[in-house]
Image (cartoon, rainbow, N blue to C red; front, top):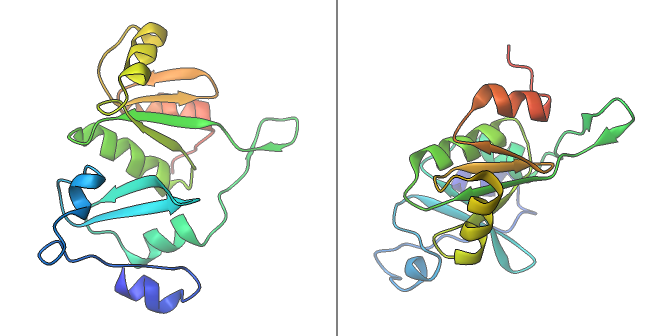
Length: 155
């Protein structure tokens, strides 16, 4: 993050040392370090766990997301991923979406019981991750299904 911050001075970056400031991580449900919280309009928008490269942050925060063609023009898919903080496959799915510059909204079902109930009603499944892509639910980290729905072509 330090290199990213130096290379991109227009993007505000704030670092918190959890050894010195102990009350912020429980407020956001952070239980691993390093962790990065991205805010949009003053609200937590995305959580990133683990060490990431300068290029990763540049793609995520500086580069505009790609438009995906639906044959009728350009559009961006509506993607919502339902997660829990302790789910490794949730983190893998989010990392995969970020790798392909797919913007998404994240909902932590451990903190939102009504979202969890709605998810079970829609998919019949309790497990996470579950990814809603334009109204179609993908259960688990199912790369082939994600690729098909998002138009991702892996090389």
